[in-house]
Picture 1: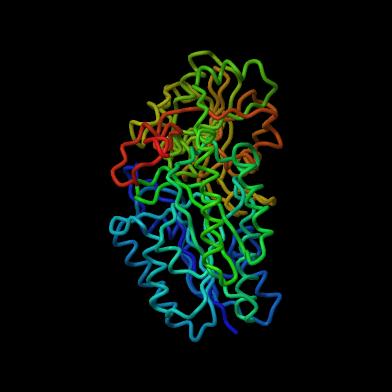
Picture 2 (picture 1 turned 30 degrees about the horizontal axis):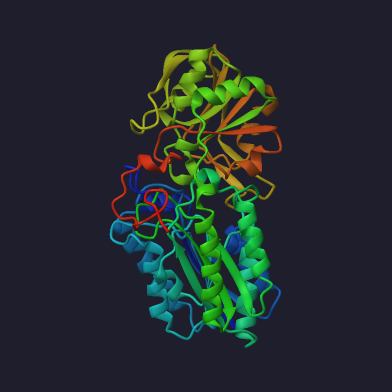
Length: 490
């Protein structure tokens, strides 16, 4: 038997001014056929789980098409058309298949299809026909549509945030496919789309209020006939009708049970909805707290969350540190122009009034302009040996410079937006976390897997930007109504 593998993954932030182009996928991953295997086979990504599980059986894994880009703005329509044309061409050329394992992100948006993942999954379903089993994995930050549910026989969502269980979920999906092909089960799924937007500040799955919600889901897995269940945390930075939370339950050919249990989970969230509103800490309050805490203290810069598509050059915290004259702090900024100026000057040089960050737009702070000393230069390449958010093991920041101010702030200037998913980003450039009272990581939950082991204290800081934790700051046009906390629900 032969099982095909397809992935198209992008988390689209519709509040970002810069669109996502084909070149963004080419920079990260755009591969077909056997070229896919070496990229993902040994990774912590769900595709690694697909390959590993199928390798234990006599089922042939047939890699077909994979496209992935770093979270960013809405995908241009020409880009989507190019990707889908290539995807469907490769699917038709793959030969006879007995099943498909598919991996959308779940929060993709294009100029012509606001429910991008539902759009391409429907095209895949129409191509292979109604009888071929399709098992899908999703990021927990999906905005799930009925079209996505209808296109697949089963959907399995990551159960951790930070996402450190991607490979495990891929294995689970592949094993469900194996049981389906053997005739042991007939997966049938149902979803409950809850009119609640869970604030991203509350989405740490190992802490309350999420932890007890996952415990309830785990208990319901013991129900006879249940094959899987999933919690959809949602992605608030995609202005789409589906934006919000939900639940998916997969049963063995029992659609009524699937819907009943999904609705039960949904009702639980509705009853507890107030617990999932943000607890916001401003920059000054965070700095006050950091003075009293054991360091390093990790500041999670929520408004410039690279994993949510932000520009990675936000400076609001840096300006506050400068105003106070400290404490010793480290930050990373995406600023290829400043990086090149530091590289040209060389280690040991002093640059007068170097403008750093705040250049992508006017939403994340003005450039930080000050004198700096160039400490060191690097090629920006590093590896991560542990399982971290996103499943990546190799990173490329591009030409990178470390510079130091005279008020205790050390800044990494890199040439490619790089999310803070690995401490290797720091250590590969000679940065010792213990040397700083504050480490600024541009994220909300994703950096925890990397930073928690070295930071005894973490503070999620309410900063402005395209990934602000204050959802009331965004002007939505397409979201469903009523939707808590924007409107009351009963």
